[in-house]
View: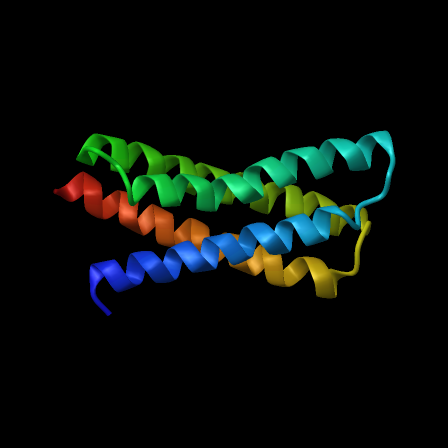
Length: 120
């Protein structure tokens, strides 16, 4: 897989992650606490893909690095909120765990991209 194919594949993956996050957040309890987590997770979970998409359309290497860094941070934050949901037992672990695994994998991918950019 060349860089262009990888980029397209990762764009699709992060878009699907966003969709899955939005589906999950719609199931959270309608309480003040649930609403806070819903809002935060919806923001971070959709930001991962949005920023990566923007990175692939960056005008400079610095812009690309910045957007990838944001995707990395938002992946980490998404994992945090998913852990909260899981530990609060607001939803079944069967629903939450796959997204937690995906947020960890996306975090690892963006961290790896960031490290490669620092070397160049």
